[in-house]
Image (cartoon, rainbow, N blue to C red; front, side):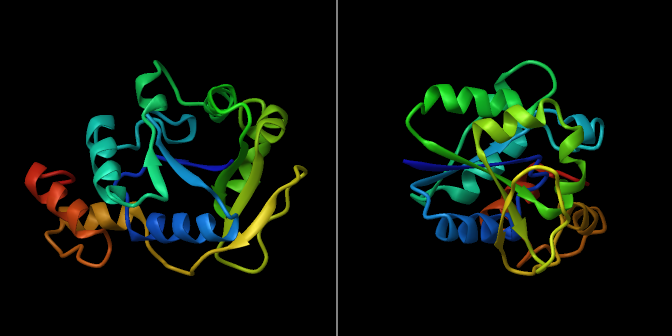
Length: 187
């Protein structure tokens, strides 16, 4: 079995996340892609605006009914800061016979060496860089690069649009937009 692990804050999850996940699923010939929302990331402490419960719900709503994807709340349920090495160790234990592919954006390649136990991360999973350019940054670690669609979209921009009362139609799936409106997130 081939499993993709795609982590992030997903604050909120958007169409760029969904398209990158779809591209990775196909390019890597995955059996399943697991999206893992972080409770608290070491590099984004204090920057996350929606609660873990809200982000988990939006992510679950976004992939509901799509058999390629599932959402795992392990980082939200685990106390403290979310470290990738702990998450991948848990998946390796849970799916001992699976080949794990850990997906990261090209913007994270430069800081990967500063993560907790990067060597162990590389031993636990194949590191796959989701690249929107043809020339991703270099790393001392072996990383596979796959191309994803070039979509200039960010959760930061979506939150700003909501705060300003502007439409987010086309930025997020309708179900996520409806959730944001119903809960008055990011206002």
